[in-house]
Image (spheres, rainbow, N blue to C red):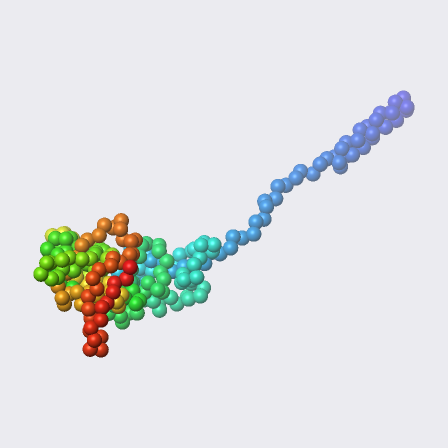
Length: 253
């Protein structure tokens, strides 16, 4: 009987030992650890237009804002907040030379000083503004508007010969209207004025002034699809007076 008890005790002890061994070698559950990624680099803030801006419109804190910009798309001419944190204040009141769209970066080269004349603000560097006499008959029936481009035709002599003396010239203003978005009370965009102000370089200004003194001028409206054609047509050169001497002024090809 004693042997049976000892054998049972030995078997029980062995079972307990085996259970303890199994519990000790049981694999520890693996806990998934999220991959630690480095924080994304901060994008620089670029000064952009917060609304569509017209030519000669003054900048204000309401129509400018800082906008994050991809670093690989930065341009050296952009105004960056880290470099010019006071740009909203210092540029306030500056005039826009050319139209800008919502979200477009604001560039120093597209701004004129806040005390600049209205027309001088939209006149590019190196250009001149010269007014010529016009009527509905010589301006495509009055359908030539500011921001259009025209060819200038000169008619003179008994034979009434007409030649193109300037080509692809921007129209800055018709009388006092410099933006075609400004319409009259009836909503019509046609402007029939007495003068058209054209954007010219100094040589073109001399050519136009001489031609206007010797004959009549007409403006031929160009298709918007032809505005990238910057060639100048040759024509019989008008004469100008320099230092008491008559000189021919040649148009550029």
